[in-house]
Length: 192
Image (cartoon, rainbow, N blue to C red; front, top):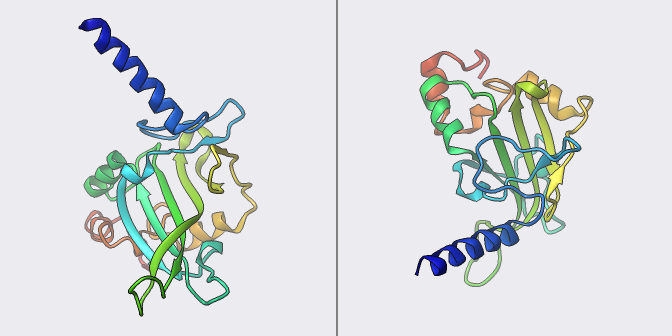
């Protein structure tokens, strides 16, 4: 009986690796990196805390609409321990990963005649706080990518987040479950 349990456990672990894929990471806390320094895709991000969803936000490339005028959705997720730390302190702890899942939308399918609903994933963007790598950094994942190199500091995302981020270069002003925590802890930038 014990041999069967061990065999089932090993096969479950191997199946987990196969489902995650080589280079992707599931069930870890904080960013994980490949030997070349690229961020490994956190494949379990949909199990993290859902922070917010935006529709057609145009402050970056994920906010554009398709040819029929359907705007994209931006869904933001953060690992649960970072979310809880933010609620307690109003700041993001080191090793925080915010993941934006950009999805296209549609408005006329099945029985829906108005409004928009989410469809396929277009891109995944990670905003990572890692003091051992110089602080906040950005990574772009196309669908199916298992790892992504850090975006160069010359990219506009860095200066935009530094100028407009409500807390620690993040857009907490768009996160309804966190903005009050930032206000109560005094970490919200005055302009927000």
